[in-house]
Length: 318
Image (cartoon, rainbow, N blue to C red; front, side):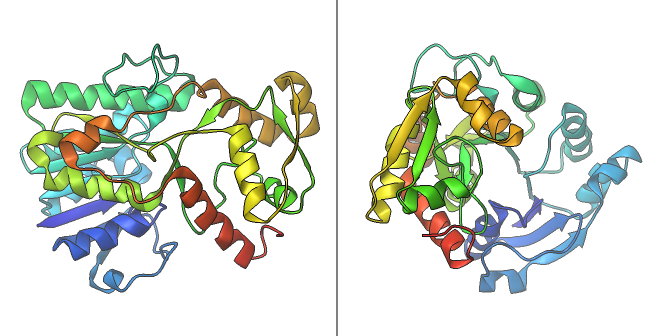
């Protein structure tokens, strides 16, 4: 089975490509440039690499044909961010694939009605990124219904793993928050600290992609959440991080508008984006039932592994 992973050296690709190789796939990674995965693995020695400039080749109308000419059985697209990009690829690959998997996001959900959020809730995305991903998801599902295009959408939450900073208890990506909690220093949280964040280890996202391939009859034409078994409140998250270091979390709480004055504009904007989505803890009942998805990591386990890497590389001070 020849499987192409477009954007296969990123967070999820670091784990997905070795899983595919170990499952017997002949894997080609397509990327703009050659770079090492976040975590080394011997499976990469058997992977074929193809360098393509997606944006430039799409502008010339050639990217889809270049992917098709590699003669894949399966295509996994990790880096599609516009409807036009999805349409270009689908038109080129229609009738030439057994399976097509698109990496979407849980942010296709915006304002929701019930929690935990299930995949069948109406899409009311907040912000440009969620709206663009929702449009791609809707287009792919229409193609599955109308033309039989063999697509599946995987919707990750906040992806975590060694090698990058995970979403922290302030709902932004400032690693100093972990340092302050580790050292027992005061940390201010927005509002009452009861908003939710829902992490997932990159390897568990990779697991779900592979499970979708291996259970294709159940996966085709569907969307599946890729998250840990349970979301975290910001307050409980902060308290857990402090406890890893034998410290007590010294937390204070401020209304968001007051709190944002104490952080950088970049951190405040990141936090606001996550707070907007905070009511949305995401159900994994569907992938558990249909695809036998079994996350290896809880949210805290995934974050702790990532923070350990940050400490080893002197990014977080314990």
